[in-house]
Image 1 (cartoon, rainbow, N blue to C red):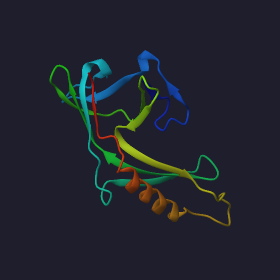
Image 2: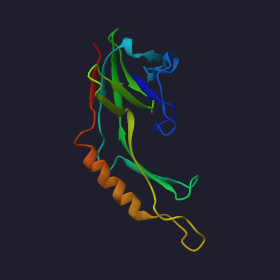
Image 3: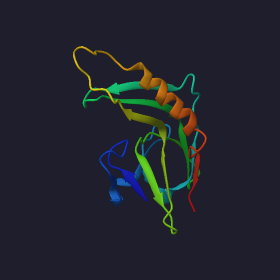
Length: 151
């Protein structure tokens, strides 16, 4: 089991035990739990028409565009409590046969760097990138991880 160092795994992965926790909202409590405290996770993809937000980052050139689909996620803890997940990191599970599965909770992103470098003459966002990313989200929904059962 690994968790991304940053939200998108751009900075790599970690398996440090202290970082393999999940932030929850359980009423007025905000615990950090480990996977051995979780019975199940339910990831509920939002509606593509209403639950997608798109932005760009000008910290790089060319800019990176991101569209994120809200995927409200709840857990059932082994003590029976149901809690909302607030951790946005990406997770990767590697199985005994070396196959892997990667998934996000809370928001599912589609990201891509523009091919065109920003200049003073160009100016402004490349709105076509948002269209491309929303089509990617639509396609990704077909294989999106929607649940995890911990044994």
